[in-house]
Length: 302
Image (cartoon, rainbow, N blue to C red; front, side, top):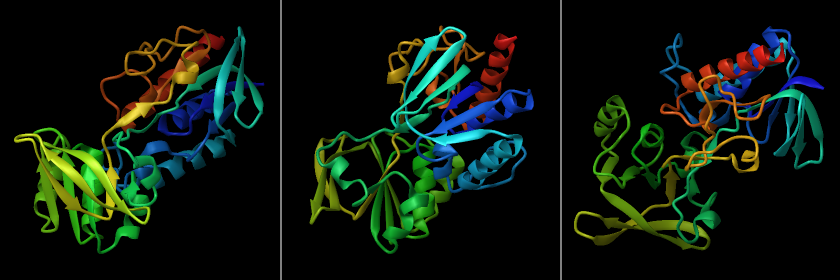
């Protein structure tokens, strides 16, 4: 039995493991996809204190190396539920393995929000992507679009501008919401076009590959066809907390509603990082959550 089982291997989860290990607790980190979480999709991280610049992948790798050096166990698995047995928690996985722990820290993060259009799922990997760092090179010399106007969308557009023939940013709001520094940098790119107040109405494809979009101009209600072979969707994230709703309160958006110590209403279960209700979702706040959750768990074990 472990002292702490952390569900999720992003910055929050791995920081929780680090703090637990450094306080003499045995820790297991369970991750279903990629250690490092959503930050691995960022080509450049420039807002983490003490680091001028690094890639998200580099940050994730350093965190993983750090907790392994401290003695963490890791497991690639999908958690399907947690059973509260009082002082012991049973963590069930899709693979059939059950892990036992004194405390469980939920750091499940979020997943990419979809447009909700017909044919969208079928075109993922055939023109639709969520990660310019991962897939940008597949679209070298082509015309692509980026859906969204926040930091993630603008970072994707910046990277793609150095790879693709043209990049069109499509924002459904009247203005971009990403950092002004990114907006200024993109405005200087000759191959980048920014369209605000537009919504994607339809996806067009031929031979199971994306060929273009129908967009609606909200100001006058007109529609137009925009040819492109790539669409990078960056319109936000949604939490993955449904299987834990019996252990913790969820807000209307599905985020775990916990206090600043990251305690849920179930003793011995904690929530940290982007999966919990909060005003700011940044790597710095995820790391802070991981530390707070681990320290709360350590305190409650005494």
